[in-house]
Amino acid sequence: MKVLTIKSSAILDLDQQTEVHHAFGMEHHTDYVFKPREAQKYSATIVVEESGPVVDMVISATEQFPDIGFVIDDLDMEKNHIERYHIMEGVVKEQLRSGWRWVK
Image (cartoon, rainbow, N blue to C red; front, side):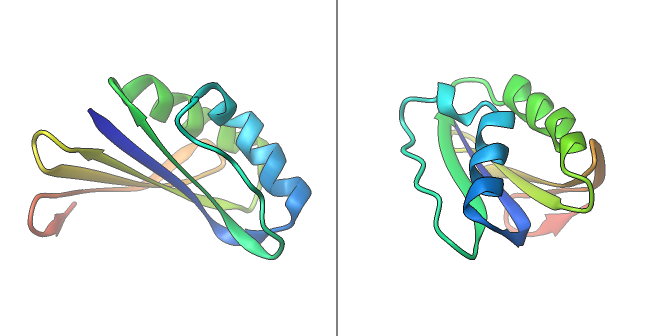
């Protein structure tokens, strides 16, 4: 199983949080209940069998939100391995991997 956490780097208003949530397709994941909170960063955590398609969809959907950065943490619970993607406007700006320590 994989655990994905998607976060915005900026504080978003309620409407922006909802727009991001639907653009990323998070409403299709029934194990997560989304409740936007005023003056907060967007954050969603979901559990999926295969994270690749969801990560790809989120990366491309960030093009819709110019000047807002996002971070995806992709945790493989079976391998105790995490990948972190820093994304802005459809481009992965930085990708880190970690077991015990972050590496580029």
